[in-house]
Length: 219
Ligand SMILES: Cc1ncc(COP(=O)(O)O)c(C=O)c1O
Image (cartoon, rainbow, N blue to C red):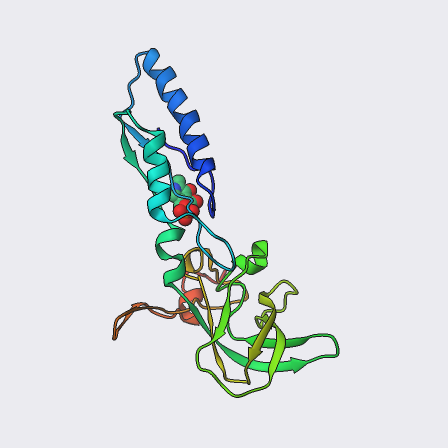
């Protein structure tokens, strides 16, 4: 019996409620002579993007084990975001700054195709300069270069930056590359794993030629 009730949950109670419902179904099936051997409660445990306070992994496991006390089914969990979300950053360079009467814009070379979460559901990702630079602190709309009003990475961020500054968009390890696209003919970014002092290029940057490779001209 498997269930997955959603993602970015910051409390244990929904998992416990779901486990109770699933166990009731397992028992109902057992009464009909159908005996299931495993219980898969999916993923869902949340992470901290901004000020969320998700339960510690140990507390989450303890709550689930308490709900399953006395059961013989094998427990399977499928954590996703909590494993990799905060292990990844999206690096992006400031292309130019635009100062307006009401708002300042920092146009960066990453866009909604690289990190879809802000544009898709207004998700918050922290944005930090990679190096501390001595520029005036200003409040920016951090936006991508795609011609869509919704192409933004972060609203109202106080940053000390200039053109060419490198920014790290945090918590991009989960639902970053997996939700990325080639929208606006943008090849996908390279992926790099940093292991201590060792850097591994684990996914090459895409090329325009690769984007067109599957297309055929009609004659
Ligand atoms: C069946 C299933 N398991 C696990 C996950 C991972 O969820 P999370 O990244 O929230 O841990 C998902 C995500 O949608 C899912 O659909």
